[in-house]
Length: 132
Image (cartoon, rainbow, N blue to C red; front, side, top):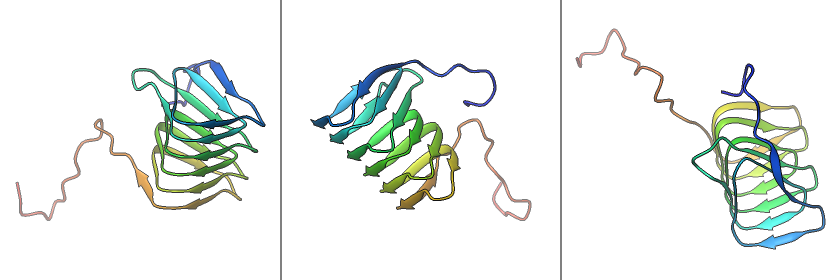
């Protein structure tokens, strides 16, 4: 997880305020968005990734990265494989899948919260269960 001494990936890409992109955006390492994206924003699945969505940013599409920090607005599903941080002005309209969630007062989600199942966790067996 992101807790402890693991270093975050560097932010190598920026979509600045006032910029509108139509279409899918793919990135590796880190990306910051302060503009508007009409399309999916997806990190390379082979690496740890950081996506920062600024306070004035708007995304209309799917968001997928290891560590996602949202301060702006996302209309679409959000998937965060490690940590999802929702800052006080964050607005998400869509389902949210996450391994760990940090949600500040004032943030809002209009969708379903779906914690990711960890392959590291042993399956829970109830003592009263009849199946072996």
